[in-house]
Length: 125
Image (cartoon, one colour):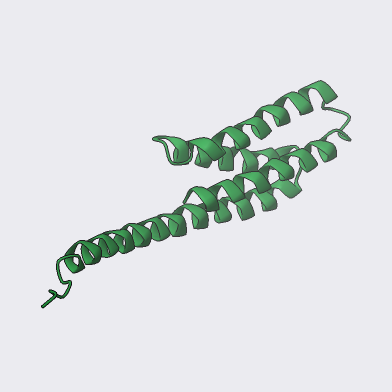
């Protein structure tokens, strides 16, 4: 799950940076405000890459997805991009958990097979 979610978060890091460049053209928003908010969101993306498997990591990721969709009030294209990345986040979490479960099953089967086959060596006559 960590790899898929981290890939999505790094993509969001770049998306937020590009959206900040677009938001700077809005005369109602100050450059300082745009880069402060965007910088915090970008930093959160990077920090979440390491926190995804910890308790609350996925929930923080969902909060970031909601914030991305809400940023569409300032950069209208972000309504669409936020929904796209929210769908990617869902897929990363959903399929990442399935992959983790399959890896755990495979490791358990492999461990059981190797412990059971150790005693079946032929005896020398």
